[in-house]
Image 1 (cartoon, rainbow, N blue to C red):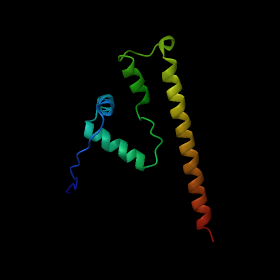
Image 2 (image 1 turned 30 degrees about the vertical axis):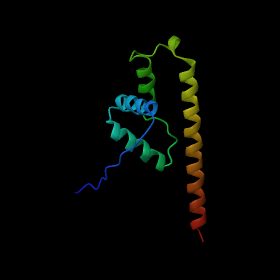
Image 3 (image 1 turned 45 degrees about the horizontal axis):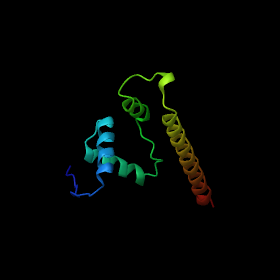
Length: 106
């Protein structure tokens, strides 16, 4: 099977490049694979919630196991925002799928 992948140069601010590098490292992907993965998620209608949210939180804490007393409230707040986005996305998808099925009926 031939892979039809066109090379595509991307210019981005160095701060964003650093974030992509960090995310790629945390997910075990190359930078290219991380960018492709994130683009695919955005077109799939995902809420942008990292698959490895817990791993990222742990990585941000220096790779140490989470101690409930040392969890940064900012991390919890961000996780709750992402959970809310996932809920909204799922509800929207379910409503759209239900509406599409209703519209198909004679």
